Length: 355
Figure 1 (cartoon, rainbow, N blue to C red):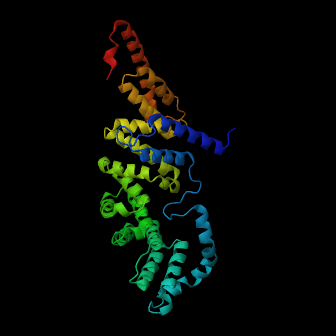
Figure 2 (tube, one colour):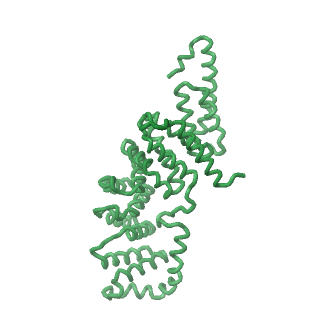
Figure 3 (cartoon, one colour):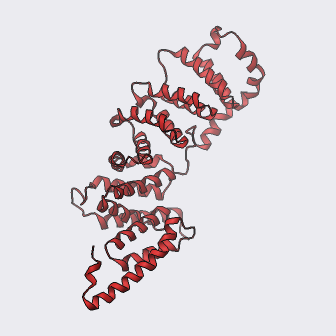
């Protein structure tokens, strides 16, 4: 039995074999427009897919499970004491200096959040922000308050925090909160507020972190705005280090999104180069999808004998998706067309199958 490291090494080897098969070393730019750095970067994304992060960050708090446990432990020890005097504390006159300070207000906000009193937590956060004026929100605090608003389930509270985030002049200072806003509004399918967020981000996109570029591209694809999305997806290929910071699902989305959207924009040669690289991971769902797309290309080019085994491979999937079910009939069609073409060779009519 192979170890996980050996499996990862084999996958990496196959990715680079596929890469070399579709890219001529020494060429400044691959045929079809993809640059050397984009192809190399895409190979790095594939490697990240083969070796996913084992410590995903949980939505919406943005922490790993262990980080949540570590951060919560100390506050859980004080939660019982906080419950005893919580009612008295919140009902005191708020002009007492002790409870108008930023530190005390943030402590009460975090204890409130710990005991799932999100409305109370947001009230204390507001008090803390008043105390720190004119400094305002910084990155970690913006994310903390935004995630609390999301956990409250109150759309008005979330909208208030969105306006706080996009109201800043430099979104770099609130990058984590911006990412969280994208994830929330995409999940909620809230086109109005998503558009507000995207408009603000687009005005600063050239100087924002790669993770925001990723989610902006994700949103553009979601909205079928492919002409705008593809340049950003290519930019992400050149900034492949981001892949190591994303979850397996997020990396998987990207390695399919780039060739899929190139294909939909009729950049067929570019798309097929990437599908050939992705298809080398035949034991993964994205790899099977890539090989299915390669089979489609063979079929359109009249290479029926080459298409048939790839369709048959997709047809044999253990848990087939709809496109894999369709490949079963396409495998039969490709086999039949191959026989017809072979028969046509005897009569000199096989050229009718050429595209």
